Length: 254
Image (cartoon, rainbow, N blue to C red; front, side):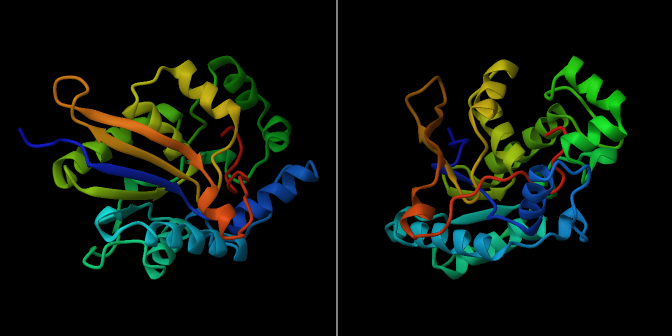
């Protein structure tokens, strides 16, 4: 039987972005809106984010050639593509790895009318949405024109099917966003709503942190991916790059 899962799967959150910096400033000042000019899809890495991406790229490059990622899949958002490019430039992929594959299903969670609002802004400008989120919880709340976590999970189910179809037995690296990292954990580990929200509540996914899975053929009838590490920041810390975990610019109701 053909192996369904990759032999190794890494999921990396993009490096710190200009949107992360702006969101941190807005939250620190208790502002309603996050001051960032670009569309969320066009927000670039910050200088610190570039250093983080270089650091995690060097960490992958230090792996033996036969253990580095063979394929890299990335969100279409600029900050994720820039992170992927810097990982490749640092030698973090095998020499014959194809150009990164942009997959729109790996994009950031869309917040619709709540985009660029802090939680203070949501409560001030859309109190009915703040109340609905409190009532439904962040897993099921879908802001107008936006997505719930369940919506993100739905598209990621499809993305994982594509990974299984085209990359079974391969070493695969995914570069995406905080909610994508969490929702992939939910799917791969078959978590419940309460379990994944507990992981989320325990702390943010750090920029350029590594979440890693290894295929275990002896588990179940066809094998499965087993978590090796989550939110691993040693590659960034050991390179002397700053550890950051700020929310993105579309932070409200994350």
